[in-house]
Figure 1 (cartoon, rainbow, N blue to C red):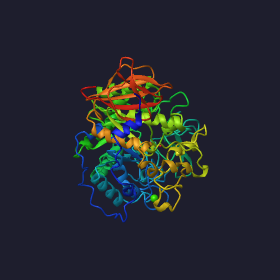
Figure 2 (figure 1 turned 180 degrees about the vertical axis):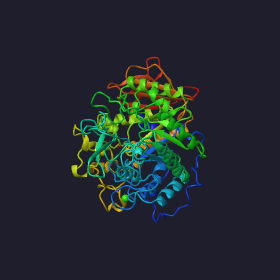
Figure 3 (figure 1 turned 60 degrees about the vertical axis):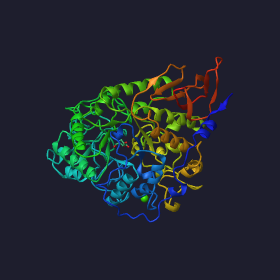
Figure 4 (figure 1 turned 120 degrees about the horizontal axis):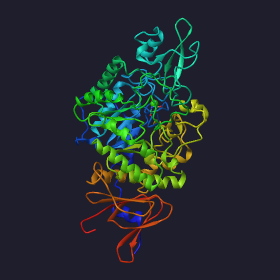
Length: 583
Ligand code: NOJ
Ligand code: CA
């Protein structure tokens, strides 16, 4: 007999909405004054929660707008906490909401201990932490230590000072080369394109020193050899820890220390976002001293406060150094994100990730998308193919041992948006890149919540447009359109997250591969859980390893010639199975 997969599976284990859709609407009359976050803690006090947490990335500008100006904010996040809770994630990481001229979407911070009025107030932040904790969600915030905004008071003071003054010593100023200092001090390039140096005009009006900026000129790099800088950031961490945050995502955690002498690289085309090149301005051994000192601070707070490194390291071995027991807790696995949808490379990167993390006793992490890369539905081919692969990739990722990051909107199957009006684009990478690429705005389009027309209730009552327009066809991809549909991408994520929380084999731990045909992955998580994946372009027959509990798409169960249960996995399909003692 042949059974059709999803119908059978979903009939056996229906996705139970844990919450009526009406509950997802912004609660009326949210009062901004809420209990202090300081003493509140998430309901779930599992030890080492972070070793298996599913952490949802909120790109604040594009998640939900609470005050109707078309830009996402803290109030918007508060109104959508019921959604995040019902989705089934463990924590939210919120991208920077600090005062900023927004030259790089808030990654140019002008004050590390305040909230930009665009996003709300410190009171809103405290209320958000308290409400998130009450809902069992942890809160991780970004810290941006490699560079400040050029409008930060420290940089203003540096510009006003004389060459050689202490205020200049907080940043990386150098005289230029050439007869009149007209050439940059070395050949380093900015991640966003062009030289990594900008020349300033001194107070007396003469052309002066150059300062280093590995990103935009509006993001001058700090001098982390200066103890004063280190002390300032220790205070920043304590400021947010005292307000109850559960951890930090550390921006450019590999970049704070530059090689002594600032030697030339010797070639051009040095870096790409999330790249792996060996460079004198990234992944220097001394950077680990900083992370050790930060870990000491985190460990003085109760409740396992964590830090996750955004570190671009040339190898998984180098990346593992950031998560040694006395350093940070997690590092993003960009090697996994960059792996194509092919069984063999995926197996290799999974093995290497688990192997190197194990060497230092850390959990591995998994990520498919974030606010810096093209959305993975699009990277995987777009359209039906991209959706099919993204569904299978979600089940693969959520079955792997360790912690996973979900970027807002991937649970809705959102694709990259390419046809944004040029006058609305904001990403500095786009403006500085020589290849005219569309930059990162296309993965940052405001989320579609409900309704039939843009901006799909991204703003309350839809009274303003979102800061970037959502495509009209996202009407079929809103939270509302997918919530009750177990076959939707959202239905798949909800059910996968529910099973992941319930099944003892999932989360932290290990996996064991089973032999399987080319183009497929089959692994077991004990006790009694199996994941099968076909990344190839042809259907593949496998022995059925148990009872199917969730599938990314239709599949067929049958029996082989010897009467053993078998499964035919179509292309780009993943199935989760549970095995009982009798299987
Ligand atoms: C990494 C962040 O994710 C990215 O958005 C930002 O542009 C750079 N760091 C610079 O802060
Ligand atoms: Ca707003």
